[in-house]
Length: 82
Image (cartoon, rainbow, N blue to C red):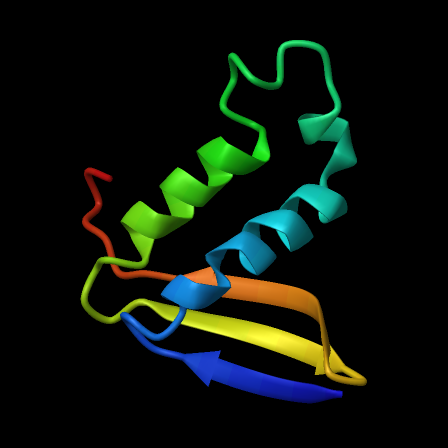
């Protein structure tokens, strides 16, 4: 297992991978009736993550096994109002 950390602007080429892994981890949301209207589908997740990763201080972590991305995490600083 290899863990790689990406800062703001570094994760953009990996957004499809991040959204796909999130969707695979949450089939109860993605495959549920009405998922598209609730924004629980890959294009909406991609837009949401893109917005979050624009924040200064955002971090994305991707776990790789055998060169394949198998897990993700990301965080971004935000205000209490967010």
